[in-house]
Amino acid sequence: MTPNALDRLIALFCKLPGIGKKSAGRIVYHILDANPSFAETLSRELSGLHKAICRCSVCGGFTESNPAQKQVECIICSNPDRDHSVICVIESAQDMRVIEEGREFVGVYHVLGGLIAPLEGVDPENLSIGKLIARIHNANNQIKEIILALNPTIEGDTTALYLQKQLKDFPVEVTRLASGMPVGGNIEYIDKLTLSRSFRGRTRI
Image 1 (spheres, rainbow, N blue to C red):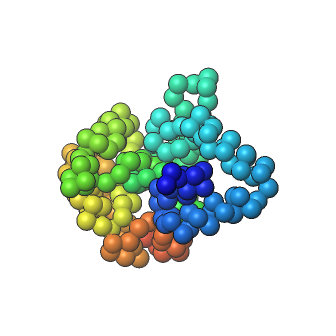
Image 2 (cartoon, one colour; image 1 turned 45 degrees about the vertical axis):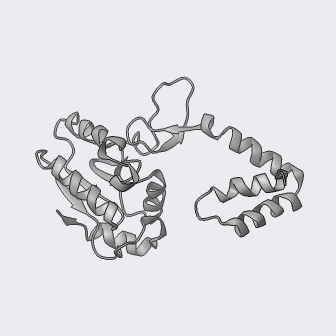
Image 3 (cartoon, rainbow, N blue to C red; image 1 turned 90 degrees about the vertical axis):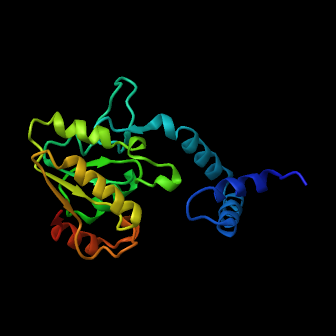
């Protein structure tokens, strides 16, 4: 039987992380029960998302796009009150949002865009590690610390070890989040207090 519009939309929502078929169905039926203007607004926002949001040219996080500029800096990278001598290396832009909510970190970020996972075909060349190295090199010794805020998983540990080797010849202190981050955990799901303690207790590696 050919899928109808309802089935096709449920299938699309199922492709989102953390959403199964039942959850997708609830979302779709909620949209159907809501005022049609809600669906129109949702559709409009989704269709214009990639035009409204772009990658920061410095850290790789997301920011409002500016058609007048080819390269756009996010509000964190362009903020002179942030400590630009400390870079927090994270897996994804979503981790930045979580860390910012903790209000513990006042430095800047660098988004890798993933973690090294050879079995999944993700090698160092597929991540923005080279851009991080260039960023440190071009800073003329202004960067003092690199915090590896990577999930304590096999992939996170592999990436941290690789970065540690790549950064050993630079005059920077390389640290990693300390106790409070459970093995196999994910930054996205860590509570704010635990995350703050992890930043305060970070250790040199």
